[in-house]
Amino acid sequence: MCKGYVHGYDSREKRRLKDQANSLVELLHSDTYFPDGSRILEVGCGIGAQTVTLARKSPNASFISFDISEESILEARGKIENGGLNNVQFLCADIFNFGLETELFDHVFVCHVLEHLSQPDNALSIMLSLLKVGGTITVIEGDHGSAYFYPDSQAAQKAIQCQVELQKLTGGNANIGREIYPLLKAAGFSSVNVSPRMVYVDSSRPELVDGFTKNTFTAMIEGVRESSIAAGLISGTTFDDGIRALYRTTELDGVFCYTFFKAIGTKP
Ligand SMILES: C[S@@+](CC[C@H](N)C(=O)[O-])C[C@H]1O[C@@H](n2cnc3c(N)ncnc32)[C@H](O)[C@@H]1O
Image 1 (tube, protein in one colour):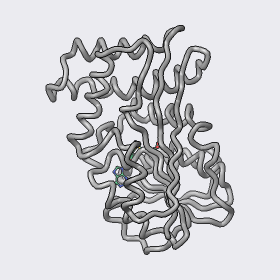
Image 2 (cartoon, protein in one colour):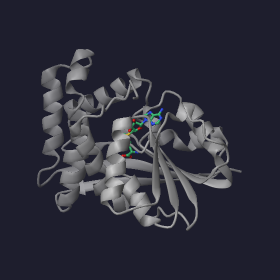
Image 3 (cartoon, helix red, strand yellow):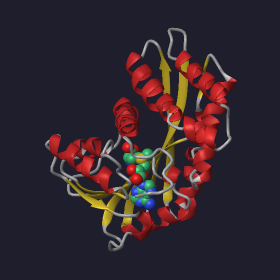
């Protein structure tokens, strides 16, 4: 189990990861495809929220998906079985202590994981070593500095900043999206191409109002209320004002924007 993992593994967080994956499938995965016969390593698959999409979109590729949390792996396996998919094998493992042979995979896929690691540079070097020469990596990460909304609210910005600070305390970086290009280059990947994917939400897109603004982003910030107050980062009143302001952006005239960064790099 990953001790410092800021979001935890409770049922609310599992629901949030599912909502996040479902509401963003088109935005993040319209161009995710792996050729027939290729071998893909999915790093930090969690409860399989992305795995189902990957396996479904590339039915003739084979996946090894792993996570440090055994409980998450069990849930991911169930999801793949329920979806009638049979091209994924699961492992419980730590990327920093992986033990698989090098140059084994055609592709590595990693989504919403680097932001939680204290050494994302080392993790990327390990991923590079696991790829065959000419193989590719796909990285998807968010960046909380990219969250802006109408009506604007200082309390909401402060509540979001609590998540950023708490993640920093556990060694992570909630603003890692902007660093994906330099990190991949420094790890030795070539032909790195980053495509920003903005989630734009207003009330004409009710599925994103619920699936993203309420159930993904605001739910994530709400989840750090107690730890933020305990860490002395914010008062309960300001935090609650911030959460109310985030919900306010989901009303008829409200707008919410957030950007994910999807990068592809090649092992030279
Ligand atoms: C935010 S979740 C993302 C899960 C999934 N990729 C998704 O997009 O829904 C981050 C996952 O990274 C896993 N993780 C954290 N540190 C890890 C490590 N050192 N090795 C493998 N997995 C790790 C956590 O257990 C968690 O399931």
